Amino acid sequence: MVVYDDTSPSEMIKIYNKGADVHADPVVSYRHGAITIPHIDWIEPLRLECEDFAYSIRTGEQPRANGRVGLEVVRVLAAAQEALEQQKLHKTITRVSLEA
Figure 1 (cartoon, rainbow, N blue to C red):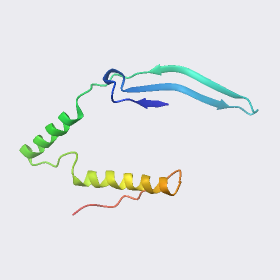
Figure 2 (figure 1 turned 90 degrees about the vertical axis):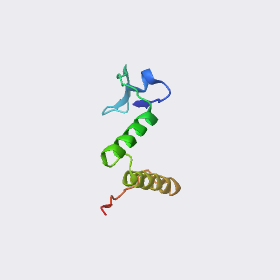
Figure 3 (figure 1 turned 30 degrees about the vertical axis):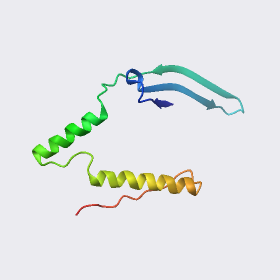
Figure 4 (figure 1 turned 180 degrees about the vertical axis):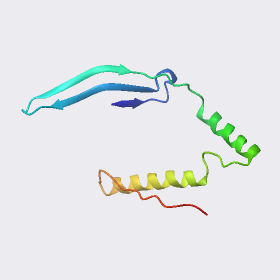
């Protein structure tokens, strides 16, 4: 199990080695292992976004968070909302080419 907590810069990601193993008989064996906390260099996301935007202005390159990426995010969120409303456990999203 992985837990993400962006309010704790020193422990943003915790990986728990937990689980349950079901054997041939009806007995379930629970596993409680180590917790791994990988080191992640934290930089303020808005700062990164602004730096990337300024870089794209200087160089003429496409920013990482451009309109096409935004459209993909909206499509995923819309599909998730639709799946929730239909009480589905999963939803298939078909990618479409956004080439102009």
